[in-house]
Amino acid sequence: MKRIQRNSLIMTALSIPLLLSACTATKEAAAPNTTPPSSTPPAAAVDNKPADPMGKYSPTIEVSTVRAIDASFKFAEGESLDKNIWTPIMENDLGIKVKNLWVVDASQFSQKLNVTLASGELPDFMAVDRVVMQRLIDSNLVEDLTTLYDKYATPFTKEALLKDGGAAMKSVTVNGKLMGIPQTFENNGVASASMVWIRTDWMKKLNLAEPKTMDDVLNIATAFAKNDPDGNGKADTIGLGVSKDIFKEANNGVTPASLIGLFNAYHAYPTFWVKDASDKLVYGSVQPEMKPALEKLQQLYKDGVIDKEFSVKPWKKVAEDAAAGKLGVAFGYVADATTFFKDNRKNDPKADWQAFPITSADSKPVILQANDAATSFFVVKKGSKNPEAVIKLLNLYNKRYFQTDYSGSKNPFIIDTATGIYPGKYFPVLINPADLNINAHLKVVEELKNKGDGSKLDFPASLHFSRVAGFRKGDDSLWFSERTFGPEGSFGVIATYLKNKNYQFNAFTGAPTATMVEKDATLQKIQNEMVTKIIMGAAPISDFDKFVKEWKSLGGDAIEKEVNEYYSKNK
Image (tube, rainbow, N blue to C red; front, side):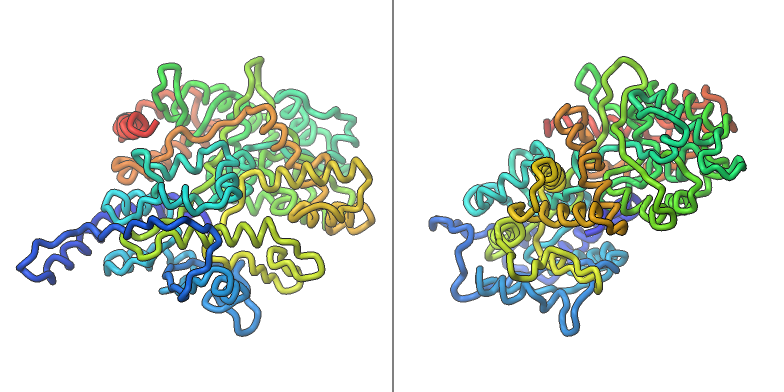
């Protein structure tokens, strides 16, 4: 499921309390006068039977949900989310029929969900963002899954949801109670930490060594801008690619060509909450560590290392610069060989990119900011007849994905490149452990080192090994896999971060606070304008201090107070 963007979160947060109030008022108006109405749904019946995490219901039960889809959902003729490969499997293995009350495009999900909440007819379970989850919890409409999870989750499921060190599970634990199941993804968590991508064929052409420090990285970018690495005799190359969305988050990761990695090198954490020395949460965008990074960026822009038009370019336009052979360095993320640089390689088979770790700008160790492993959550309606069903469905997904041998049969978790059909997306309750791709990378590297053929590797390592092997045998269309999962691939950078433990998650794990809902859009706007103007030299570095005062007076101080109140209750 796509990450719901900030504006959508805020709009949802604004509307949910009103809708829930309207829902309660409607029910009360219709209730008989003889008994006082109750807005609290009944709790599920206590189940004292021994739990069977994979036990089949007899007779078959039906549980309802709602779904969002996007253009990446493709179906064979006659199939849909209502009827597909998983429909008979869920019924035969677990005795569960999943009924979709509605299915809409992801862009319409929040609006449709608001209507559903207003009607009071909640499905038995659904995947929601943090804002909706918190509002439902506050309205006492969500089932406490603490005991059920302990009883019904398989050991594999429990282990898989702790692969990020427990951050995702903590985010759904309120007052010691498990109020949902985090939908973790393999490219979130540690795998979302920044790295820097450099065009290594240009490095070789200019006799530049691999970077060991942040100064090395920026010197390489400067050389790419000044020393004609494409050899056309024109000053038309961009040293450091930067998009207008300097800090913007994207789906299950962060926008390529953002500058979060560079700021982290200077120990600054924009748009991120961190703990200070007194164990208080502070907002990274207004801390003094931002200033040295801004000063360096201003100098790079002045020197012509950064594209003069960066302030109007979304990341896809920067990717077009890369594809045209005009870009040499970009701070980015683990999947950029596929999403950002693949067309450059396609257009120029001699072009080569490699990911390198973010290094410190000084002698202090670098600590990188990483996205939460989960940004959506499965919640169960309070009073649902079979609240444990969502856990059993997740067990089944994990069994089919990670514990089933598909040798000699079609693996439903591999995308059909000819049609784009990927049945794995259809399953109603799914996660991917945060270390899934990191472990696949390590297995691929070990298999290559031992000169194996990949036949004994499990999925998905087997898939990635076959692609890397295919590239090495001459299929250049698989270059992206070599640069992602090979020995010098981007997941090697993530494995290094994991080994060194030089990353951190956002210290604030709650839903947007009341003042965030009201003021955050304005605060983000003035933040981004300040950063852009300083980089372009349209404002002095001292304007950062003015921005901090403005941020505080326009709602930042109130937000900080609310954030710390939440933090003190949920440590």
